[in-house]
Each structure stands twice: as structure tokens, then as C-alpha cells.
Image 1 (tube, rainbow, N blue to C red):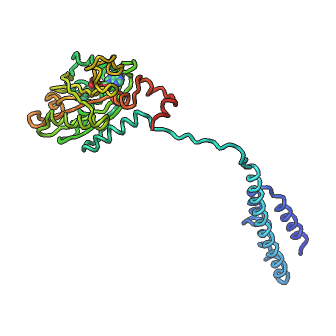
Image 2 (cartoon, rainbow, N blue to C red; image 1 turned 120 degrees about the vertical axis):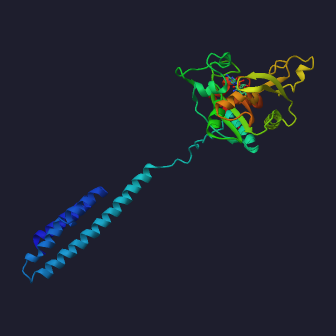
Image 3 (cartoon, protein in one colour; image 1 turned 180 degrees about the vertical axis):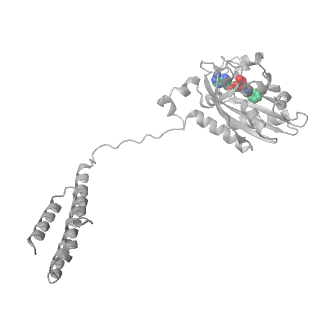
Length: 346
Ligand code: FA5
């Protein structure tokens, strides 16, 4: 073999042995065997040799090429094995260490209550609609029969975002938005967050309501009573006492406030001389929601003919229901993120 070829072979084989990474091996493959590699150049130069020398030198160069390829593959295999060995030795597992505990999350009690409420209404054929938390004055008040300067606006302490925009004070604007888009028959609930300037043990500045409404021909107060009584007996007890009291909302006529017999004293503290119940304050009843027959004025705002259709609507506070279901005395517990409190619910 020509001396310069032999020299190149030794140099390349030695470089292969020195390669410390896969990328160095790849670079060497290009340098030696690539299109412009040293060995490729030599093979190309064969045609300049005297014809009688070409077969022999050609055979030698090919042998050299095969050898270089083989060594490159071997070096790659051993580099991979070394990298793996290094990784494994750095990954020693100490099986005597105590395991790390996986904390399982719990569903928030308000979500539990909300899901249960929604499920009961889905079971009665209601569908779910949603609306924006930031509402315009028209949908939150005006179209619900509360013109500007109407005293009923003071029933709910409003957070204003701008002159014409508010954080919705109730879920009733979803009634308007749904009726604007669709024609009766409608049987819809609208769950969501609402906001009022209110803060004590039973009132929170952000809380949740579920609105419900049904509109069709010949819907009556009896339908409202039937739906709400069934709902309350599902959420509380089959034999829970339910009471409808006359009330006032600008968007319903007639209107009612709906109470259930106190879940703590069962209504007894109003009829006995026992010391007064701390939850119902001795009245025997707990207010749960507001309801009524949708006011004809509201139908006019959404383009329905109040001579042809009628409907009922109701709105309940989800925190209030969750407090009664789970026996929670302070509404602020829901929002303090105290894990000792939250872990109790399944
Ligand atoms: C309304 O919000 C009416 N939109 C409900 C309604 C809908 C009536 C459709 C008729 C027809 P009210 O302001 O009473 O009504 O609130 C309804 C419920 O929300 C209350 O019964 C109470 O459970 C709850 N609630 C009111 N304010 C707060 C508060 N600050 N924190 C927690 N819950 C509250």
C-alpha cells in the first residue's frame, strides 16, 4: 500500500478511537467518507494511476473504506453504551426512601352543590344556558323592567365597570339574552357567578346563582310550584316542607319567595317553646329562592306576545343551598381555600 494511504488510514482509525461523542463520530464520517472526504478523494484519484496499478490500489482503498465504516459503527455503539451506563449510574434508586404521597384533589363544595342542582333540572328536561359576567345596563336592569332611577335597582348593590356596564348582580339577564335569540317553548337554567357590594357571614361580594325559566303557551303558577317543590325535595328531603310567600320582583308578577322548613330544627322552633334555632332564628323557615310569573313587560322587551305566551322564572343562591346542605355557618369558608375545610367534601 502506498505510504500516504497507509498514513491516512492510521490517522483516521486513531481519530475514530479518540471520538468522545456521537457528534464527533458523525463529523469524522463526513471528513473521511463524505462526498469531499479524504478517502473519497483518493478513490476519485484512482483514474490517474497507471492502468496496471489501479486494481490493486483500488482494492486496498475499498478495504480501507470498509474498515473505516466498520470502526465508525463500533465506536457509535460503544459511545451509546457508555452514555447509557453513565445515565443509569446517575439514576440510582434508593428503595429504602419513603414514597412520596400523591395528594388527590377534592371537588369544591360549591361545585358539588352546583352539579347536583344542574343534574336535577336536566332530569326535568331543562337545558343549560350561559351569559357574560360583565353585563350592560340594558340586560341587567332595563329589559327586566327596571328603568333608570327605578327604586328596585337599589335592591341589589351594584358594582359598576363603567357608566353603562356592571358586574351582573343576578343571573336574570340570561333570561333576556336567551329570549332575544330564541322563540318559545323554552325550558332553561342559567348557572353562574354574580356580584354585589355585600359582605358578611351570609352574603359574599361574589356568589353563584342558578336562574331557571320556562316559557310556553298556558304555563301557570301551578307549574312553577310543581317544578320548585320537586327540586327542593330532591336537594333536601323527600318530605321537606316548602312554602311560597308573596314577594316583589320588578320582572315577575305575581312574585314569591320560596322557603323550606328549617333543615336544622325541622321547623319545630316556630311551634314549640324550645330555645330558638340559630339557623332559622326561631322562624322555622329558611328562604331559598325568589320566583314568579314573568312580567308581560319583560315579554314585550324581547318581542314575545304576552297574550300568547306565559312563563315562570326563579333564581336561587347556590351558596345558600350548599350552606344548608353541608351545615356551614359562614359563607366566607367557601372562598378562603383552607384545605382543612375543603378536604371534608367528597
Ligand atoms: C334575585 O337575584 C332575582 N334575580 C331572583 C329571581 C329570578 C326572582 C327570577 C324571580 C324570578 P335575590 O336578590 O333575592 O333575587 O337573590 C336570590 C338569592 O341569591 C337569594 O335568595 C340568596 O340566596 C342569594 N343571595 C343574594 N345576595 C347574596 C349574597 N350577597 N351572597 C350570597 N347569596 C346571596
